[in-house]
Length: 131
Image (cartoon, rainbow, N blue to C red; front, side, top):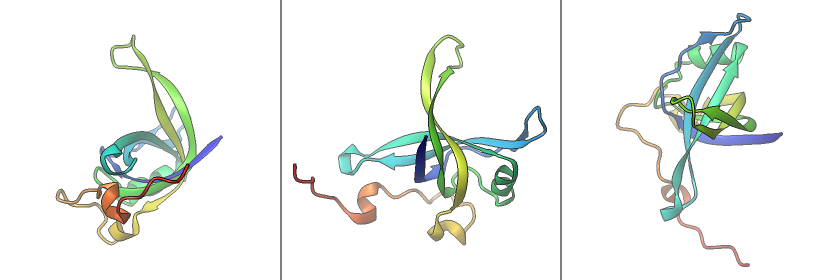
């Protein structure tokens, strides 16, 4: 089982739902940047949380635009697209732990003008490793 730790921005509002077995759950997308400089591009993960963890996320006011760190087990999941015919794969994170990114914690949900800095502005460009 692959374990993942990443930081990203929630890209939709959260909707707390209840399973057939009466367990609360959430499913929401989070976007992280991978790569550096011109090679940087967004990657989306489907985050799943159940029970007390799902309630904590909802009670904390996590929503579209929130910047979080998340960790859990990662799976590659096959799914049918909206047309019902086309199949594709997506990354699914079974959430174990989470938190607001410390610089965002005091602000709760970020305002419209805030954005994730590009990876190059966090710690600058890096030289290639020697071969």
